[in-house]
Image (cartoon, one colour):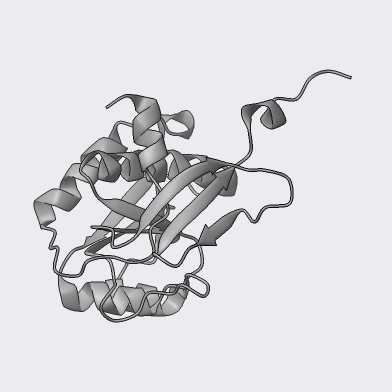
Length: 189
């Protein structure tokens, strides 16, 4: 699979097959990918909390907000990765967002390569999530990644004028409309 195909396959998934199980080793493979990512000043301040056991996954799901598509029993992911900043290593607020974004995208591409799907979740209840995960005080919660076997299908389409950006059809296929490359490239005035 080419990188372009992998990127196109990596979609935001909100419904998962709960019969699919993940192991600690599966989750560790994603962290292995993330550890090779570049970081600000090579400080390597990101840490990762991994969850794959069903009871804890369900508890973490309760701490997350996915808009109207919030996970419901029966469609939760098989695992979560909580991306953290170790403030004992680096407490600069400006560095975490780049590092977390690079690591999250790398993990999502790794999931897509394995035929899995994921979702980067920035809306969550910090304190309840901290209680579920029992994190040390020096670990700042940055982002939550859901990972599992998709129950839904997404297709990419070019965005035409006046169309909605995302449409879910009667067959539960999500049509994700993307702006054309000509619209993305800015030229000098």
